[in-house]
Amino acid sequence: MTSPAPALPRATVVICVYTEKRWDDIVAAIGSVQAQDVRAAEVLVVVDHNPALLDRAREAFGGNVRVLRNAHRQGLSGARNTAVAAASGDVVVFLDDDAAARPGWLGALLGPYADPDVVAVGGVAHPVFPEARPGLLPTGGTTADATGELDWVVGCTYTGQPTTQAEVRNLMGCNMSVRREVFARVGGFAEDLGRIGRNPLGCEETEFCIRVRQIYRRMGRGARIVFEPAAQVDHRVSGDRVRWAYLRRRSWSEGLSKAAVAQLVGSDDALSTERAYVATVLPGAVVRELRAGRPASALAVVTALGATAAGYLRGNLPGATSAVRLPAADTAPLGDPPAARGGVPAANRAGGV
Image 1 (cartoon, one colour):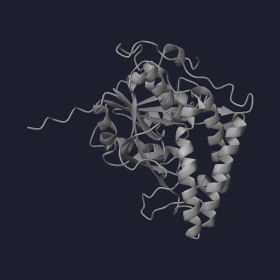
Image 2: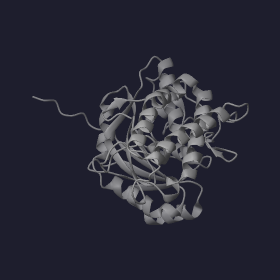
Image 3: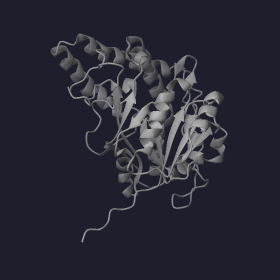
């Protein structure tokens, strides 16, 4: 007689929003969550310092959708930390406001938590382009869901990531989940990973995932971060993100952000995945695109690599990322109950350290 499958954990699904220009996307994102065969315990919509959007969302959404204002520093990290503090589910699931979950998404995302060592699970993000895939983004496949080596530029799953369930260093923010108790141990998302001058700093999810594993390791506890390809979302790509100027700007920002993350968690962990990607995945893409008669996409790979490297070098100059700090973490043993409901330490709730 087979044993029954373990019950899935209760999930709080979080959608952080900031602009009314994405209203149709926001409605679609919420609808895709509500259409799942596995129901979320609650859906939180966090509005990032936009009173007009806050009023519109509160008027439009009801039922098990709760609309909150960002109580932290303006930006995605602050909005996520607001959601964590309010969440009641065992697992906090983050879905971008311009992404729509495919059928079976939530169940696939929650399944790996049957392993108690799994602390976070993420899935696939498929790009939805304004028209056809742009010529500057390479791809090695011909199907609608084929990935490309530079799809990370538009916030989506890229060639080189696992195609079956596997443990990974970090997850992508548009489709990821974390055990709520983890935030009590390691703090929330780093709100200083925002904007310095005109250079936007990202990689909040990368830094967070690395920090989780480092802190759990010091506590003598395993922490598995799992990529589950069966958990899939469609991520809309706006027209301005399929241009050369955006490719250069986004790549520069990626390098700058990686420099900030390396200063926070160490270069070995911060660049472990990138070294293999640069050494094996990108050269293969350049050769393939040239052989296929697609010089524009081959040039795009070289351009992205050069701009990222330049951003990383700039980020390592004195003072370039010195303002970036980590949030406070709870030092309670892992066996104890979380220090605060929602898992974000009190010091972090004010947006400080």
